Length: 295
Length: 266
Image (cartoon, rainbow over all chains, first blue to last red; front, side, top):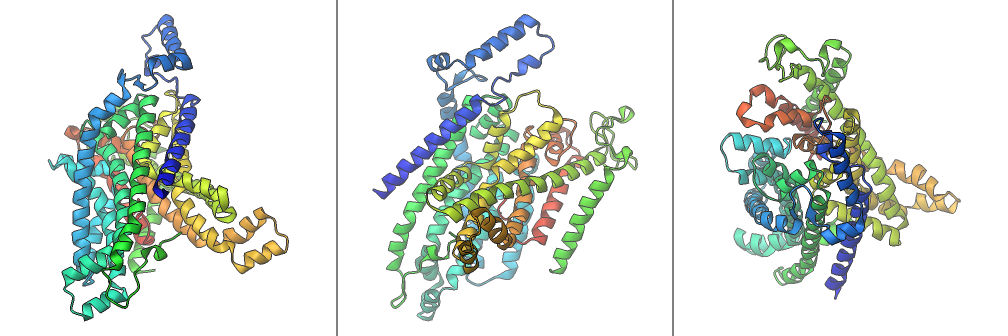
């Protein structure tokens, strides 16, 4: 019931956002922009014809009969374009995010329990280098060295994930129930899997949702630079061609998907907390990571 | 402040001072075209060579540093003003105002930053003057970058709302605006400072990505992002073309060293 209410709120927000975005696009100064009008070879009649074509864009009845979700620059339905390119982006983001998570978790698990400062410094130094470069430049560097395009997303995500995961695990290992588990002779793997990771799970789940959004942001310059026919490249093409229907559809679709991912991760968190209560040693109350969260 | 932070701060000051003073020398003009030396390699006269139009790459890099750093700082300040008013209102008034603003923050944060910028930039007409595109690019950064600091400011104001000195100010008849500006704002100074230093690197990187995609300032204005566009053709790459990327990396590294949190939210 609560989830249904949250979902309804989410849909209402998306609807309001869509209406606001449409109004903004409709009255924006760039709505009628057309590169062809800058062509000096066109005579007055041709210019008038293009301007008449644009005047029709402001006629709501014609738009509804033609279908608003028709890309003016690519002359194809928006849903067709998105369906064609979404798998490419999903594959790029999926593999990139998974690789970044594996690397960040492996490094954090190696660093956090034993407080290995040298390894932490190495990971943070490497991460800082990637943090200080725009993802477009990282894509160029990987591309010019002949590396796989999919490597750029993990390079962009790793430093952001490693820092947070490492901090979360370090805070988890400082809890008294972990000390008790250690004193009782629980193996390091047991401590990690049964006591440390479940404590961090809600935050890790939220971070997983955020990392997907960050991955899509990184995918835009990567796909544009490396000529990968995905949604990021489509968004760039739509922006350069002032294709507002396509750009609006993409923005709304991604906003909805991101809200849905966030909602799922928010609603999974309490379940994990309930599950982890049984994994704590006797005599310790269930840890509440929410208590440490900023409001 | 550690030694490395002090060194980083000195480097940052030198970079900023160098880029500002370069603007006073007519020979270091970013738009001047040396027609006799188009596409020249690095030399004593042109330390980073010239581009296809004969413009001195070094002069353009210095000007780009000036524009990017100063405008990113201005955009960051603008975003903070917006964030203070929206986050402050949400935290101070609570209720439906809080719910609406929090929903707006969530919506803003759920859409990739670059996609929002691409969409907003595309709303501008094609014949926008170059100076206006420069101003609009950073204004967009400020207008879209308020959400993350607003969330932190809201939490800070919520914490302060029930503080005794605020209650006393209200009991003595201070208006809401006066309480917010005279009592809440000064106590949020550490939060605002941290958010300012966090936002500057974020805006620099965002502009760089936007410029690389050709949607930042129009020619002839140089920004770090627009200079990176030379990298778009990997077949014609020369080492000098990586100078803007190196400048961005050094500056952001210095920011990160001066402020330990700087760039972590990039």
